[in-house]
Length: 376
Image 1: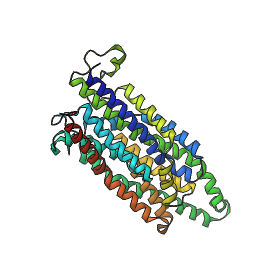
Image 2: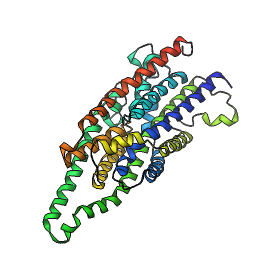
Image 3: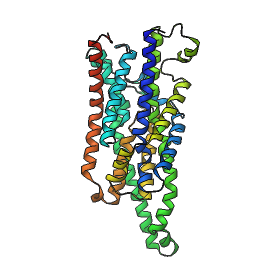
Image 4: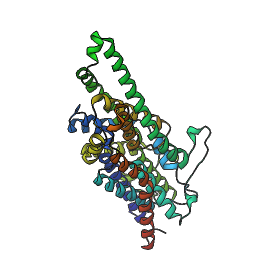
């Protein structure tokens, strides 16, 4: 077995480690609200998230195609296996730092930052290695950081806050109207009945959130593995593979994601999700604002809808951003003074720093590897 092939296998292994960490790091995104409202126990919520993440991860590959062929210009810089390992390690290190601090940062942006930082370093500092904006017909087919990362990074938090605010505001107006109507409607609008109804409804919204998380987050690692394999195929690394590794040969054109990659990443993310991420669950579910089932339902429905739309268009949107801002919007509708702004400030700083921090770590790793002769 050649050294290049061993390095490719190392890329796949590190990518799956990232996927596992992504699973427990972002578990909170799927289940923080349903745990905080005590609708499900932590164990029940993690199991629900693991199953729905798995189903969501198998539902499509649009986001994976963006990661594998829409951000780095491979005509400018060759993204070898060693560079991809540095990119993944950049994302892994930042994820572990923010997990330890209990900050719900974005695994999506950590991976994008790591990939961009490693690509620029591999191109000896040339920013031409990145696809900034590449028209593809209508705006939904455009490639590049502007369309697939920057625009969603700005729009998804705004959409999350706005949708959470509107849905929660609508619920409050409806309950107020029912209460004023008297009779049966007034009895149904009492807190005990509202909590009972939304306690059941929140199980469905939590499942929807888990599914949407799987459609977006699991696919990012699929894209990295596909990028590594296509690069290895082009370099001739896969020539003469032993029969037990023949599955590594791509079955489609560049940008297509083979079924074994999809299934493997989906299962690994589900396993990571099952491991839980209690530090971040505490921040999202308890520290920002006190939640009841109706608030959890509104936040999860808002965030999952945004993620589902983004996944359809191949945008690697941050699950963290959408659910955090949806919770903020719901809390604002409930009572603007109930939001704990010091906690929110820490979260926002984690968002701002994620791409440059992960990119900086990956950039430094490429430079260190080059100085040791591991990367040309």
